Image (cartoon, rainbow over all chains, first blue to last red; front, side, top):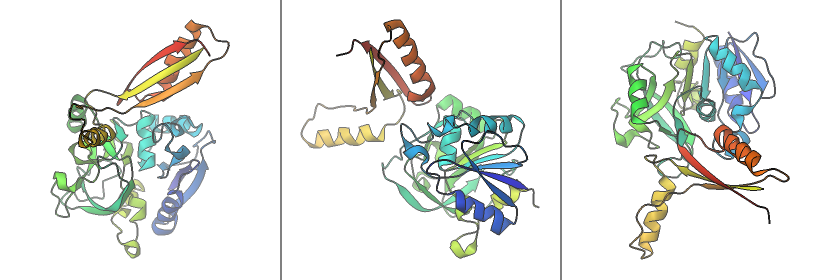
Length: 228
Length: 82
């Protein structure tokens, strides 16, 4: 499978994503500069973490106007998979490809630590290799990961199974104490209605090998690549 | 012309900065302080632009980039230069 890894000015998890895809998974990964206009020949897109455009105005607000984002829009319309991680998630909500918004953490602090994620379902192409009775351990590192969405919109997300992951305790309990940033309903990741766009604040690409503390994130990339 | 744009968190959107600053003001003895909301202020210079055009451009700027309608509200004034 051929993954496009988008690179914006100040993306900084692009190489982690490349490493996970190329060296751990053994698939093809290609860096695509944000001024490019085509995603022809790619099977999946990764929008990596970082601080695109210095987080000016709002995280992701400027990057969404990069030329490559028009191609991403077309890619999504074609039903192909797009995963946005951390800043990539912020870019996707700013672009309107995912619902809601991401605002400052409730604590106003940058939070960098390991968290536990509970997958809500394994019916999407991103989660089909995941076990919903388990939790997945991976790091977060962000200042603006507080997911907000209005009550009516939240109900719709829940109804359509668009909540992909929630912050949980190691045992899988969804409680306020397990919420690192104040996100509504402990939401850590959401899907679009077509279920081919996933945005999440935690970093599965930084949890792709046991040697770095966890390989729980690999299941997401394996799912995208269509492994059993 | 000059556009003065005020962007504020929408009603019902949690504003952690505002909450913290409100608490600090009350700690400083200003007991009357209730809610504090913190937003952004943007000035846009629009030289040699007629008022109507300036309004049109500023509205477009707010809708397309300056404010995120999911979480922010905006208002603006157009004033003469100088």
